[in-house]
Amino acid sequence: MKSKIVRSVLTVKRKEHLAPHYIRVTLTGEDVKLFENITVGKNNKIFLPPAGSDKVYFPILDQTTGKMEDAPDELKPIRRTYTHRGIDLKENEMYIDFVAHGDNGPASAWAIQAKPGDQLGVAMKDHPAPLHPQAHWYLLACDATGIPVIASILEALPATAQGEAYIEVLGKEEEIPLSTKADIQIHWIHNPHPGQEPVLAKTVRQAQLPDHTKTSVFGYIAAEFSSVKDLRIFLRKEVGWPQESLYAYSYWKYGKSEDGSVAERQEEKKSLS
Image (tube, rainbow, N blue to C red; front, top):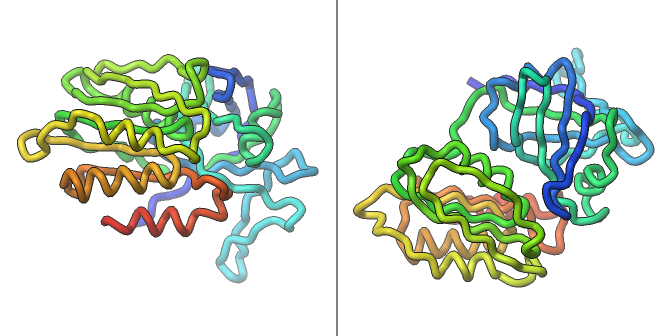
């Protein structure tokens, strides 16, 4: 049975720079409670007002055709995939983190310019879904775009879990506080040219991995297309991890928009399934 989709137009309550290029936007609205069942760290869809508009118009159901119909082009929101970073039902708040990489991307531009009262549409599948299976040892690797999900996993892991986390950011000033009860060693990797130089993949390839035939392992990779592809081949083909021990997802591809790279990213994900 398909999961119900919950959605709402929320408004900006405040925003803060956790690092020069990392923005946390706090949203509020009476419908925040609709999202209480969603696992923190899961992807969601955000809907950005188009240029020239300050309102979000969701698609609506055409009662005649039974299909969802978008608003006219001049009002049609821009859809992007982002990570549900947290929720506080007592304060009626939801948190979504954005990587601020200038005005090149609509979501980044929106976050940079966001001010209290601005609208953002949010839609999620209304069911809890774990981000990872139980394992003894974890490999977590991401660039800045994957920090929200990796941070969520770190917070959720039990104290008995062990492993390594590799996080690629532009420089020392981009490192943000992360918390975990697990015995996870966190390594910050500095790469001023993300997407152009495979620093993350090269570093992870040098990691000391346990023997997966003797201990349960799980890897979560969330980064740029080329790094994800390289690490998927490394872990699945070269090291021999089974399919169920790895989740690797590319959030972006260097030189292309999210819309322009979606087909390639999905095809690569299937390549070693």
